[in-house]
Length: 242
Image (spheres, rainbow, N blue to C red):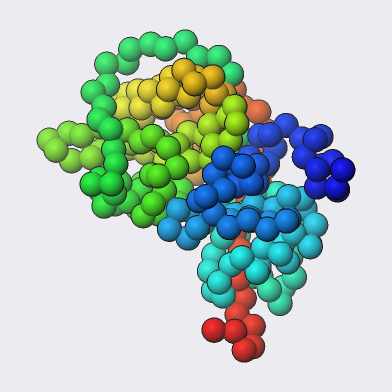
């Protein structure tokens, strides 16, 4: 077995979900090398490495355009001639292994291509994480409309065999406390469990919504599983590159 194969054999899939997703079920949404992979820029700025070696981050630089920004969980050291480290974000990972569906009486609607402009505007206003023009192609997305306007949504992002991530959970200012986010996460989680997948999600430590989000997820049967660090990196433009 190769070093990478041996490493993956020791890991729970949730220890490096983006790498596994991009090298298996979601490979058509990205660009994949031997030690690094990334989603297409119109899908997500998320990238992944097979391990924490500098070889992996060096390889990733060949998959990223100069001045482009990517976010990588579990990245190790970087060559500063190739990368500028912008920030490191602390994350908690939550999992829901068993889910008991219940009716929160949230009137949700399916979201798709015709809703992208509103979805992106809602994400921009609430900042649950990155959401690009084609992110919604990664899975199901549902939302709540009030007087025709999209005020809350949730959906799926990283998906691999047996596991599906809940993502882009957000509610517009002035519409909190109505159970919208909880109802939408419950709907997405129920769908994932119907296809025999474990649900997981990530919460940004120190974000304004962290405490509220953690309470909502705990009520739905999620438990905190792990802590991780996500490096946000900008590809340096080297002499001669265009």
